Length: 157
Image (cartoon, rainbow, N blue to C red; front, side):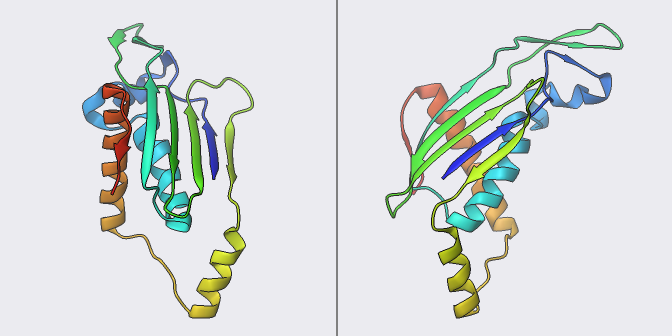
């Protein structure tokens, strides 16, 4: 599975209305918003990987609020790269990038996806995301950040 998400948001210069995306304690970053939502959608289809390696990079150490000129310290990642593997041997690659000035959007490539849909139709099963799924996603985000900070592969199960 390959996921690439690039957004024009989370730039070095931001509108004052986006102030909430600067402090880390607001949990409003590229990883928590876009990573959390896209990983949630994809892993709801594919299941969660068994292990990951991750790199998060903060290229913008300061953010300027356009209207006021206020310069704020910034510690959140604007680039996130994740690789991993699933129990069945499938491979995960994901790249999230902020401040993309052109050609932003998202791409998702899944192999053998239609077989999973066919099984759901045949068996009458349906997986519906729950609050428990959201907790699993928040745990994944924590582990991506842990892998980046300690430079080591993190087991997810």
